[in-house]
Length: 352
Image (cartoon, rainbow, N blue to C red; front, side):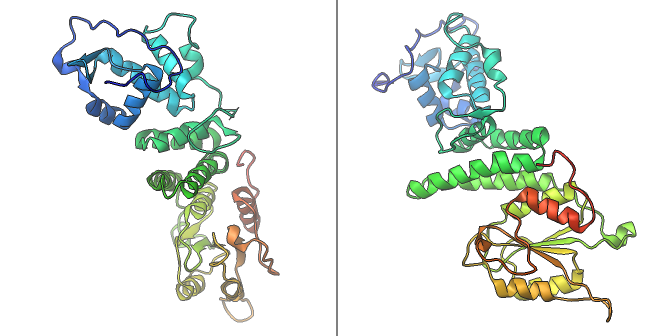
């Protein structure tokens, strides 16, 4: 492509590699076909080619990129490393060394980069992440590339390795916040990134949810925790995380999701008779104290043995608005601890 050397490059682009005589037309991919295979955009492949020399061995008519099996293997390594949080320049050097494109000693060892420890990282990234776990950087890069398979895999790995509470607080939340800040500061750009990441976070949380048996099914009279967003509130992910955390502990829940009307919420409390009610409000404008007081005052049961729910006000919308008798845990770990206490159990060690 003409003008390919106009952009700055982190290193000298190597000479094109010789193409094996056995390479057939069927084995050569176009940029679009390779992008679909890897789950990245064609623009990403062209950018990697220009900036890091991760390019094809041959070009049709001297212009159009054509990718051979060795090229594809090198790109697969590049995708795997960047998805794991390795900075692109380092990943490119390692991928080229693994493909025999650069000599030994001129790049970091491939195996060393493949096993970057999940500690803290301050490497530059596309999103304003700050001082976060290495997994956040890999997740952010995959989300910005709209690489759905990589996003899904990294979220599942975070839950498997760290547990749901740590994965939510230290991997999912920082990345979601970074995407939100980028969107807010870039004139509505990156909204597609936020939607894709949010959808996959929600999917991961729901997959981690194991529904406890209903009282009528298991012969117990254990009352559930009722979780609902207040009227007008559409942000459900924190509530989904709490729901998954409770189910992981074997505590019964009833999840009602976004923007539950006040009348429906009151009716559900009376019908279910929950041990606790969690009301989520992201914004101060949706945090209705009269509704919270009404739910806390709801009673059921026979005369002389009336029961009322424990009410937890969760989310930043309730900040600075203390109400007597209503609890306001600051995070997922504290909410789980409070609700475990309501059932007379202790939150196991390692849950956050």
